[in-house]
Image (cartoon, rainbow, N blue to C red):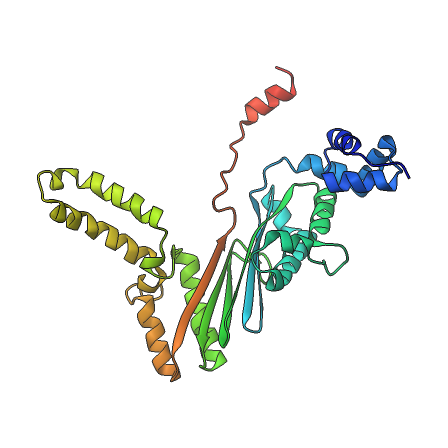
Length: 309
């Protein structure tokens, strides 16, 4: 067998656009013959998949899975919303969510997990890119667990059971009956999907976000704090910041069902009715594409470029 050098791997990568490990494997399978390795990659769909990998993927699906007292949510992106309706893609997202119950939020571990149909999740993703014809990306994952109680899921804009545009997990720690926890958890999850809280409590909100709100409050109150003692100026600024904390922390948000009761009071009332304390330990909310800056295409420019204008 011919020696597979770093130089030949690089040359194959440059020619095919495939990943380093795929190129190394191809060269090993073809005894170091670059031409044969290119053909090997093409037959596996890996060269085509690599070329597609540069295209932006901001659509796709969020998938959730719950088993016992543990739940997981994943986001898998595609280039177009059309792919989200594809049975092959939906099956992949569902399998990824179920495997994330064990791998948690470690995307690298999830990519290396064994897919039910053979190979790894990463291998299956590469195969899907080649066969479906669009770039796809395993973007993020998260799992939650309680020692006793329930993890309840909710999917908004569902494309199929457990798959949609927004996925929510609510972790309730309690010895209360399962049916009561399920009912409360579903209501809380729907609230989270609609209200999009930044954190569980006001103290949990990212300090950088709070500082930004304080800076905005200072600017808005600039005329009011001129000439005021520092402690008075800070009190003027504190009001808007405290309001921001209250409106963006889950426990102090007004429950969407009645529009007035703080979520923490809803949980307290449910605890009293169940005859057992209920603690909202954690929540997760994934919204498809959040944080991804979608590229704005100029169709006229694309046509001109294609025509060589």
